[in-house]
Length: 278
Image (tube, rainbow, N blue to C red):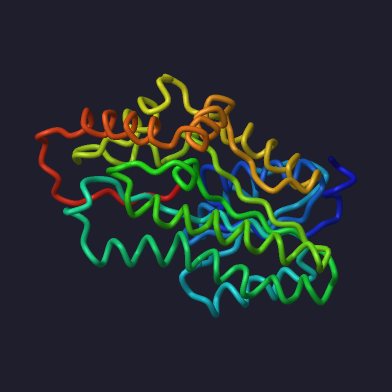
């Protein structure tokens, strides 16, 4: 692992918490030079300062919805070897209660944020003849669910973008990996108190488990996938099994998901749909 990452330069978006923070820690431990970027500059700085290992990290303020800012962040990290398009949010709740502003916000961050990263980094990687792009999607980008319609829409798009780009990038010596975990122990799980969509109970209940996946374990999975140039990371094992079942018997999975979604509706008020970073 250290041979693959030692001395390499990485940019991690959404690095101030959750999966992005875990990726920063894992990369520094593996010897990489990491630009830990987040819209919350203080959080990014804290994560960067706390990361230990033979590598190093700096905190960077970055709004991934700003294409010019992403371009500047990529330029500042040159020569960039590894791009982790990880910044993202979730908005949950009944689709009829979503506002157009909420749709635009989640598309801007979850999808356009990834596009901005690729637009800035991919041509540079082509010129260098090497590099690896990692896009954080979700199991919700492989298996659709009601009450997560806007989130699923963006994550399905990220999966498709990643898999399509991989078939081009291989001819330039560039790898592309898409990450599709189910519930990970991040702020996203507890972002929905008081709404008609309770994140932790929804995500964990869908998997029939009481424990979310460790972000540090996911980061280790991702670095292994990058080192082996794998196309996707689908974890944990029960999620991979559900995905395979869904591909073999899509009708069965759709019916099961519809029954589960029906159990999640409550009569509690929903003054505002939740929005929270991963």
